[in-house]
Length: 157
View 1 (cartoon, rainbow, N blue to C red):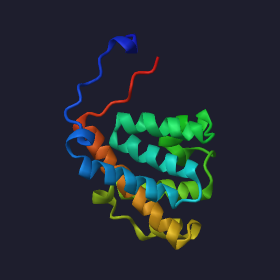
View 2: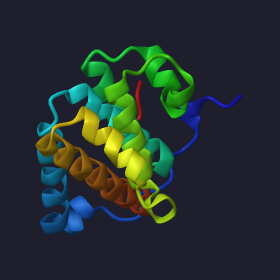
View 3: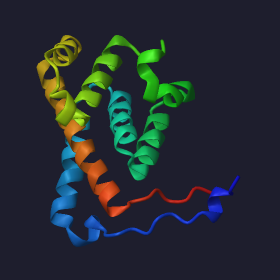
């Protein structure tokens, strides 16, 4: 087993924060605005974390797992989020949000089925549902920026 502190992180390819701030800052602002439109900040972190798991964005995984913990999320739920359907740990509202997250994240293959959308609409008023879709869209954009630029989390000591 390798000590993770000795394994160098892949080099950052490009910093959008530095080289395209007029794009990057509004993207972050849109993500924050979408999250603020949800009644539950923990749910926003779970949505961000699940999309980031699917997309493999290390920076976003680290950031949103930390954010979820800061909002009181329990470790066993974080540990099983990738298999949320097979656990009893998530509420019907969270399940609807996670199903929508997966469907929108994988939109090229799913086309967001009517049933997935209808289930989310049962649990979220229209304004909150609109913010949820916005949040899912923004985290997917941020995941793509993070993966393409090789944005990595800061080392933890």
